Length: 65
Image 1: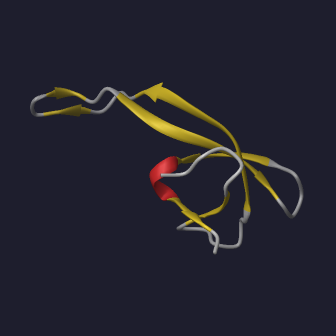
Image 2: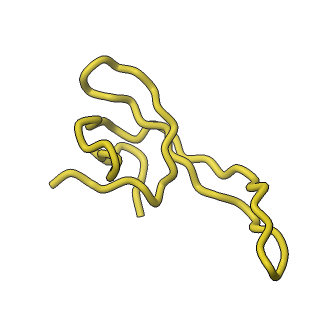
């Protein structure tokens, strides 16, 4: 699990290295057989290259070594 101020990159776009500046939960509209999903954890990442903020699902992030 990622934490604030961790150096991370998205698994599916590994050239976007940045720092986690915020974590938030948002409701999900996905409906499953047993009911609807509750919430999903998102991370706001500030990219090192151009200081742009991106919003990425937390499960799609890897910590840099």
